[in-house]
Length: 240
Ligand code: BTN
Image (cartoon, rainbow, N blue to C red; front, side):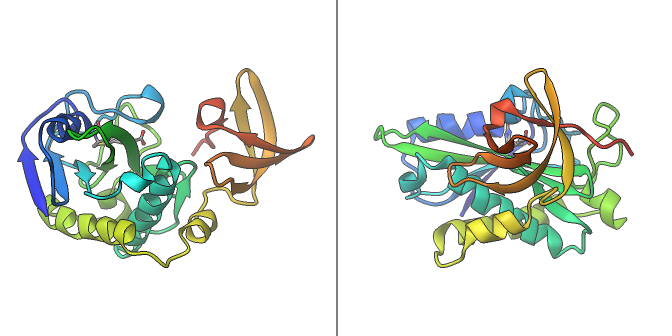
């Protein structure tokens, strides 16, 4: 495994995309930056993280092109691997909030941004970006965020954590045989509970029943089961 450590960059996903375009990478490659000036989140959001406090990195694994048109499969595997890894730190009440936010209780601990990219050879490749809140204890602009330190009252060495989480993800994505779909569905935040959601201007109540194979959230509503795409749905946050 090859690790490139940076003090700062705009976004590790974009840095790795540029590398893949120019070079043929033959070993798993990680770009880790202590600070991102333009960190990217899901749905075009920004990902903010205090410099040097958290893990923000992107991973490229050769020979994953077969998944390039099934990004949700990658999201599922990475979500479950990250959740299992976080469980090993005795963090309580961990779940995956569809599609791939990792929560402890109702607060966000980590986020994943999987993007496809074009290699030098013009075949598609996959960039797996991850932001894990580690030692940061104040999130002034993000009332719904938490960190490993806030959950466990311990501080962590970022390098040691990186060297343990990345192999776990590589193993998950390269070894076969596990029922990732089942593990993902079992870990879903709010599964079988009554919740409120917003779709467009419509707020409604429903019960999360599952996630379809193509990544849509299946919610039982008063008019029956409905499927929602990531762009169509937001959870109504439960206040503390
Ligand atoms: C989300 O939950 O919205 C996804 C957040 C993903 C953030 C990570 S940090 C490292 C990598 N580089 C980025 O610009 N984004 C991802």
